[in-house]
Length: 441
Image (cartoon, rainbow, N blue to C red; front, side, top):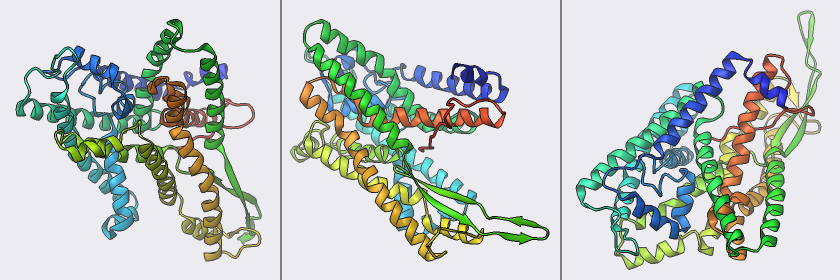
């Protein structure tokens, strides 16, 4: 494997792509440390040290930028939310359904609408963030925003919305000119950036006698088991055998081959987690617009990440979005039609409609345990926090959204790097096969 990583830098194009990706990610991390004007960064950090719940989770996605009120505080989540809305509209509105079937031109239009939606959602979230910042006062009576008002709100909306648009552009540039999926890598690097601090804080708790060392050892064992389970979930497939009939074209014989259709246990990858998380941010975002409303405060309590109601709805939404995204990513009717045109068939199943129904039936049965397992992994940190009383930032690396994104994006990026190596006749990263990955966004 070490030799394979050395070979990566012998390929000029791959070396250029990796270098470009690293430079863009460095720019993203630098932007995550530039605080917006008229914000007391020390007072805000003091508040977040004692705050958890949804704000801590959102801060994890943006690599700590939210707790520092930086220009990249909103991260890429507005773009993810806009993409979800456009995809949902594609399932119910004929116009967007037509765009999805128009090929490259349709995808360009959908991307354009997603960008417009990103600006709108980012502006709304930025206004909510400005109102939230104005309402924060530390235990010493220090206000986070010394000069509140509409001037600060409009400035914050402009800065944060511009920051989100810049992140969106950087993600698209990584996908086009770099290696891996840009949007996924930006989320990935934001999560990884918090890992050293989370480990250091937990070690200080153990050294200070506030944590039992046996509990930490058990957590490490749980982490190993969960990582192995996530990798198995990511790479697990159900193979449907396919036979191609022999065809005589001129003097040559084509077909007569046996292959298979690989149906993944988790076809949707990590996208259901991101989709569900984006939707679950909405209630808390709305409540920030009405800080004095008792009804909104009650709703906010139910949709707090520490609430069982939040975790239950979160799990159900993951199951729903797993089926939803699988239906978008894999169309059994198209697969059956292509097989029929090429002379392929599944042994014992009639070509055409019966083949599509057969594939869809298997896909439905395979996706159910995958979606349930995905939901259980996602809510695992909630139970770890309740049982061991560790911080949520630390528990999130033992399961949940963080671990799923880290494993999924890492496998996807390695798979793309390996494809470049194999294309130029270098050895891959694994002797026993290829790295299996998928694209997430």
